[in-house]
Length: 252
Image 1 (spheres, helix red, strand yellow):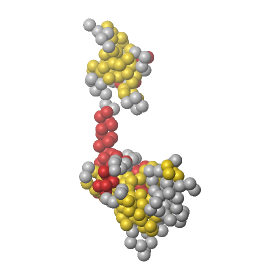
Image 2: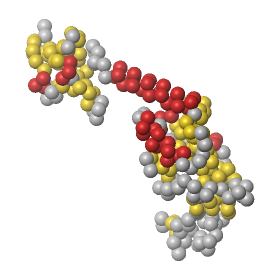
Image 3: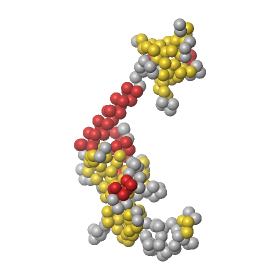
């Protein structure tokens, strides 16, 4: 079930959190494919939410004009951007129906369901298997999915036909660029710094075949087998165990 056939829904704009389990509201509420998200009032019998005074109302009156309950959506994409939410990884259009209350920031609705989803390019995993797994959680909603690249929109997933060639090509090319960039970052060059653990930071002076010559401070030159210098991903630097460095030599 999505939007009932006899309903003419309002279309709003909102953002979601997205992980391996699928879409969630910013408050953690899970959105389930083929099921509308139904508003729930979290005001207690005293009409308070998180200690703030709120007007009580009949639980069946969702959303109520006198409360803050309801599924929220902005009026326009620009309004969503102005609120600072567009920076999140997933946003899009959403159908709103049932009781829909208009307020200063858009709408609060009784029921909602995604209409179209937009993904920031940097939100897409680099592994093709992970891309497929993650996108499956979105494709289950039966919506079109677009990639945002600069100000351009690329169709990534078309409901009923799957991956779109243009969007998939973009992802593949982006992965290639990423790996080329990572390879360049992992290529040791003269001038790079290497942490010789326990001794300090050395600077690469030259790379001679399988051996690297580094200068440690103003006093010593060390020779290190290239294979012994590795990237520490956590510290984002080149490192070498001190006992792998040899040939201390006084610098003139």
